[in-house]
Image (cartoon, rainbow, N blue to C red; front, side):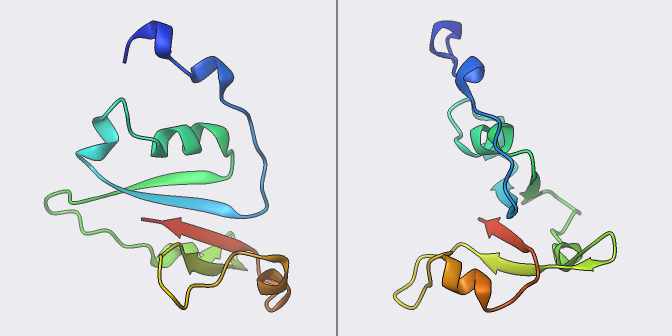
Length: 102
């Protein structure tokens, strides 16, 4: 990306209760036009997980617990039966949420 088009100075610093777990193909992570790294830079409570690496299968089971705290893991996935991440959905289960974004 050309330096004059860089957004880095304009990326906000957001603190959310929901943790973001971004899953990217390892080829995508190197692209300067990938939007996932922008989300990671803005959201302090986020992590990147790469898939498609030879001899390194992706295992996200650890997302269900963090420092002994049980977490509710939701996956962002478009479907007709998908539910929005709303206050009513949050109220159904008191555990903190980790949102997996493939």
